[in-house]
Length: 327
Image 1 (cartoon, one colour):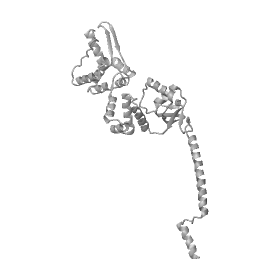
Image 2 (cartoon, rainbow, N blue to C red; image 1 turned 45 degrees about the vertical axis):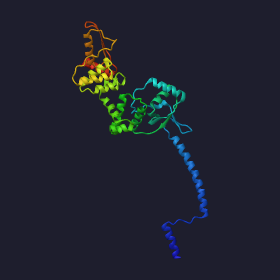
Image 3 (cartoon, rainbow, N blue to C red; image 1 turned 180 degrees about the horizontal axis):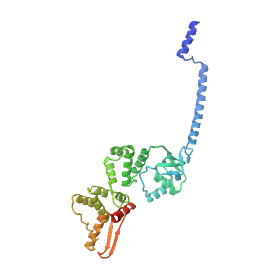
Image 4 (tube, rainbow, N blue to C red; image 1 turned 180 degrees about the vertical axis):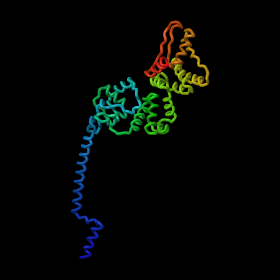
C-alpha cells in the first residue's frame, strides 16, 4: 500500500499525464467545436471593435475600405511642395469626375475629426474641385521624418517639385533625421550629385530663389550665378540674366569673365532687334540693371523720360527698396 501511495505521490510530483480515455477524446472534439465557435465569435467582436475604434469622421464600407470627407483633410505639415498648377489640378479633377479617386489618399489622424494628408494632396484638392463628399483613404501613423520622406518621394517620382522646393525638402530630411547627402540620395532614388547640386541652390539670396521658383531664371542660370566668387558680381550677373534674358551658356561665359576680373559689356542685340537708342541711355540702363539686380527699362533721353523697375515677388520688392531707400 505504501508503494502504491508513493507511486501516486511521484505521479503528482512529476506531473505525469493522465491516460486518455474515449470519453476524453469525445470531450476534446466537442471542445474543438466549442473553441471554433468562440474564435468566430471573438473574430466578429474584434471586427466590430475595430469599426467602433475608427477615428471620428472615417467610415468603413463592406469591403473594409475607409472613406472620409476631403474637407476634413489638412496638408502634410512637412509637405515639400508649396505651389500647385491650377491647370494640372483641373485636368486631374476631370479624370476624377469620370473615374473617381482610384488610389486612396494616405492620411494620419490629427485629432478632433481632422486628418493630415501624408500622400495625395493633389488628389484631395482635385476631389474638392469636383465636389466629392467622400474619398478613399489609408489611415496610418508616421514619424515627422517619415512624413517628409513619403511626401518627398511621391512628389519627386511625379516630378512635381520646383528646384527650390526639392532642395528645401532634401535639407529638411537631412535636418530631421541626421542623414548625409548619400543617405538622402539612396532614400529618394537619386544620384548624390543631384542632391548636392540641389542643396547648393539654397545658398542663393532669397530674391534669386524666388526668381528660380517663378521661372524667371532656370536652375542652369542659378548654378552659373553660384559659380561666381564675389556676392557683388553674383548680383551683377543676376541683373544681366534678368535684364537681358541671357541664355544659360551666355550666363556661364559671363560668370567666368567676372571671376577673371574682366569687364562685362552689355549684350549686343540680336540681328533685326537693334537698339537704336542713345548709347548713353543704353549704358545708363545697364548700370541700373547691375546695381538693382533686376530688369530695368530706361525710356526717353537724358533730360526727360521714364524709368521702369521690374520686381517679381514681395521679397524682391523689399530688396530693391533697401537698395534705393535705406542705402
